[in-house]
Length: 408
Image 1 (cartoon, rainbow, N blue to C red):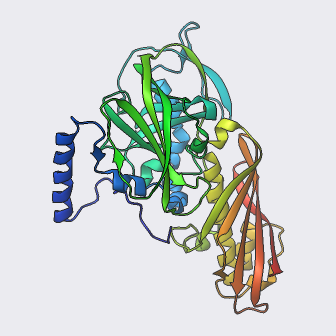
Image 2 (image 1 turned 180 degrees about the vertical axis):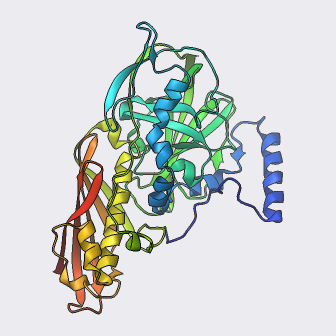
């Protein structure tokens, strides 16, 4: 996605041109007329399917939503509706420490609809993939940065029609291409749990319409390919049909708490220049998760949070070096020798996209490696280089651990 490019979904509260508002009203009236017939178009589908790939805003969004992340959306939903209490023992189940897992007994206390205490309307569970995701209303990046988003122009799961749910790739839907026909998807609300079975898959062009149904169905939407850290031209769709429903009762589930992104010790003068993808043009490539990560943790937004911090450190490092501020450099890369080609040089030209490899163990990331090819002008060592930047994570802090540049 180009620097500053917006996703197709409109942010809540944004003013639309008069003609656009008229078109939207006509579209809504048309949908209401047509929903009596099977397989009718969800008019918002074009913008909906187009708006899943805005990864480049993640670093900023996660900073702005750190409080929500720290509150652990899934756990607050459980607690708000007494779904996280073991009524047999009469004691609440405590949320585990950040990044850890714990089996909890979900028992229906008082059946209530989602309250104002949490923006989460329900939980999306994909047992074969280990996914447990909070579902919020909306398709803007503010929602997709922390949860699975529900398209407001579609039905809710469990009602007549097609419920369209979106998530960024390299996130909750990173492996939905592995869902086989007949696989189970559950949508859990305080009162009712709806069970769906996967019935079809499709790869479509961004902007393609999503269709409504008369029966209760669900369509999951994400970018294709699912390891891309850039705005892709295609979308991957998984459609499932409701096969059963029942009261939300006692069952054992494993839920993960949400994590904060690791902090990067960027000096204030450098931070004021902007060290995120919203303020620095850096072409992003693909994301690979290695090591022995917990399966459920791997399919949350946590790996991408770590990735965002690594990108922040990378950008901060480039700016510190090219501005010949080695004091800034030593703050974010303690004990690491500054790479001579970038010291005092112009901002490098990126000849290839930046690929990201994250190494993790259990529910914790250990390191992140970024690789690309750059052209350096100015400074004392101009030329074309293969650049490899490694970062290390210690507790809740991320710093640069090595930065190598070899002539290409």
